[in-house]
Structure formats: structure tokens, C-alpha cells
Length: 298
Image 1 (cartoon, rainbow, N blue to C red):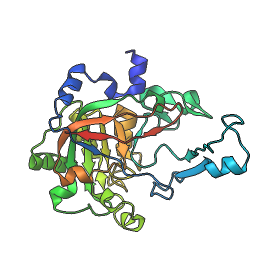
Image 2: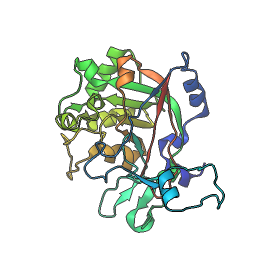
Image 3: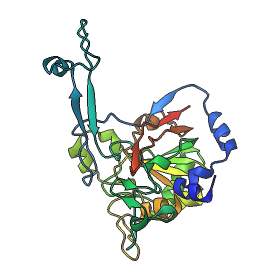
Image 4: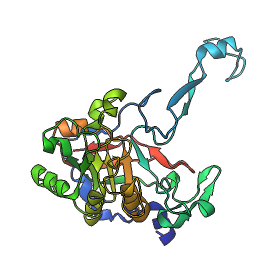
């Protein structure tokens, strides 16, 4: 793999082959957990994103009344079909951020040397975009913060810090290792899709000390069950003030992929804290994320 490609892929691009084999050995029961909720028009989204829409393009009735002949003039059986547009941000529901998603600084740069002036076209970024997202097949770890605190869902704006990450690991009897994907539950998706109740709990999550903890443990990706991944508002914006210091540290500065809006409720209910994590992002040129339906397999 070239140095340039590594810059566009991030830490996961250096995943050793033996870690893939080790991760596969975690499958002993043959049970899968989907980590994505159903997407639908009107679904709750981060307010900065466009709404999710499913629009009909072809229907059996439309073909018939329009006098259309997609297969030619002979259709004695009355064959029809349905096809649709899905109009949505790639950040709809469970998704993985591409490295080009977030920028910082007056030059609007992102991980690996990409910048708005050099690498952003009218059809999206051409460096570090979603077409460079690789498959993820590695060990996964769930850290259940509300379970540790004895809550159903963390309170609004509640940070999960490095000390609590250590405490959760000890309580769950799990260790975070290099090349892992770490998923942090806040309980937020337990309220899905009740937008009013979700608003009452916006937005708990890891703070910048937890982000440093993840870097120290060598993770390749991490995700939460909220739309912003990190706690909002940030308890420590740093200098200069940055409203999303965790995104900046992990995604922009270190190439650690972030996932948001993951459904971690079933994993937590069954106390599944270690598993094979599988995610296959869609390779869409110019996109800044990929909707995913990740699996935890045990």
C-alpha cells in the first residue's frame, strides 16, 4: 500500500492480517446483531443535514397509465415494477464518516493532507472521500456507559471521560487493544425514533480525554449511538475554541474513523462486550460518509 493511499484510508489501512484472523475466531455461536435502525422519511437527523426522502420514480400504475414500454411493446402479462430515488445525506442513520468529512483551519484541511482549495470539487472531495473507505473486519468492543451508571440513558450533555472508560472496562471485564473498534453506548438509541424524548437527552458522549484514551489504546475506529458521536456542547473546547474537539483529534488529526447513530441496544441488553465487528461502507466518489448496517457477530 502506498503512503498516499494510507493517508486516504487512515489507521484501518494498516490493519495486520493476523488481527483479521484473530477477529474471525471470536465467532463461536453464529449470532449476528445489526447495529443500524431502519431509515425512513422524517427520521430524526442532525439538524445540519437534509431530510431523508424516498420518492417513487416508476410504479406499475404509472407504467400502465403513462403508456410506457420499458421492455418493448409486447407485455400481455401486465408486468410492472417499482423503482425509487433515495434522496439523503450519506450521514443518515447509522453511518461512517469519511476522512474528508470534517475540516479545520483557515485552509479547511482534513486528514492526510487534503484541503478545500486543492481537493474539493463541485462533486465533492476527491481525496479521502467515501470511495476510499475500506471494509472493516476486526475485533469490536462495546462500552456501556449507562449500564455502568445504572441508567437507561445518559443525561443531556453528559460526558464520558477517560477515567470512566477505564472503569467501564474493569466492570465489564473487557480490554481494549490496538486495532479494535470501540463502540460507546449512551442509551440514546433506546429512545429512537421519539424525537421529543431524544431532544431531552442531547447529546451525551465521549469527551476529549476519552478521545485521547482511544488513541492511547490504538483503536482504528469508534462509534456511538448519537448523531454527533462526541458530547455536545464540548466541556473543553480548547484554544482556539473548537466546538467539536473530539472529531478534530480523532478524524482530522489521526485518521480514526467515526460512526454515529449506531443501535447498540441489543448488544447491551445481552451484555455482549466483545465481538467480531464487520462494516462494508459504500464506495461513493465525492461522498463524505457512507450509510452502513454494521454487524456484531459472536
